[in-house]
Length: 476
Image (tube, rainbow, N blue to C red; front, side, top):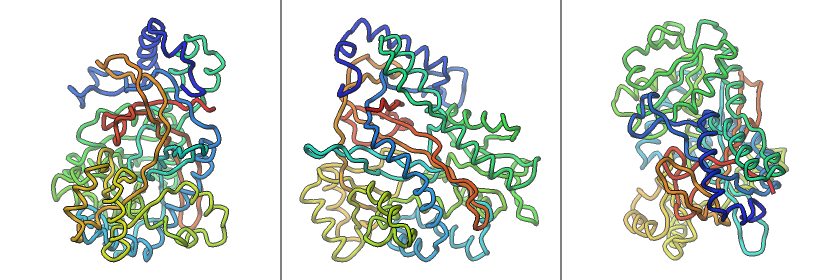
């Protein structure tokens, strides 16, 4: 493991077996938990969330670069959300062909036409990166995407450092154990939610965690709930079903669900088309957006996180629109971009398609979807593009350069999975939190990180999708 755990530890089968047993128990002790596939809505039976046996080596310079740029990404998302003209231009082609994006955009336009409801803005984002290794060059940090809705694992990633510290101590790697960073995104995310709740100005009002029908990852969210209860801020959890039955606005546009006034709606649901299983779900989303409650994210910030906006931002001169007098900030953000290409109708989109068909292994084809497991690779790119290349359907996708991380060796601990060394690649997520009231940005912080690792045979998918596992960076 390059500059990480030495081979004499990695290849000592008896030691690895012993460490894996202790690691699983320590994960349970620390609360690194998920519900089981068999009973995803009950906590009667739980298991450990999958994680790596050892922390994975990660270059210190690239890690610090990701942390340093996060507040600029927060500012960028916030400024785009206030630029109606830019967002309309950026998404014009996408909403022609992608029904889900079009429904979201229709709500955004309706809210604009009614005068908007954004006096308090709360953003909890996660920007995801991989290391691109080309030839003899040092690895460079490249952004995969920015998540502006339901960015997960800020809770459980607060619990994993002590697991890896224990494993390294048992492996007689005391020095490495002292290099595992403290990390508590849950506290930082909760701090921003608490600030928005205070600004709303009613002690009786609650923070509503708007959650999915299937809730295996409940403990990740409970970490944030716990931080809020420590501040005596009441929370409750509601699914679409519950909300649709009892949602209402009063004459002042205050939001009520089940008789409770809602100060903050924290979306951990609503980011995929299948989440909206009935017309009532869309009506409930519109009602929430119309309300005085703080939405995290509100509809416009949700739209800012689309792949199409990411692609448009990579065009020359676009970042300067949002940072007109800050060339250093523009450079910091742009340094994390990889190649992003439009598939809009016309010569530019035609060139993109020709390029992808000629060398599909150089690229990733991305639809406008969140939640992991949606991206298209290799020969599948050819299949999809051959179908859509002459129709406007192609505008529902963007093309991105494939990032090439250098693999490292590790053990991926999963329930009922054999204990075997794997060739792995890692993805670094950085959490950002901001709160704005009117024109005043009252909080803008980088609040922690998340490292996820998967076998290098898997192209796509995160922890919740069952592909990646939780990890910690061992800075080298």
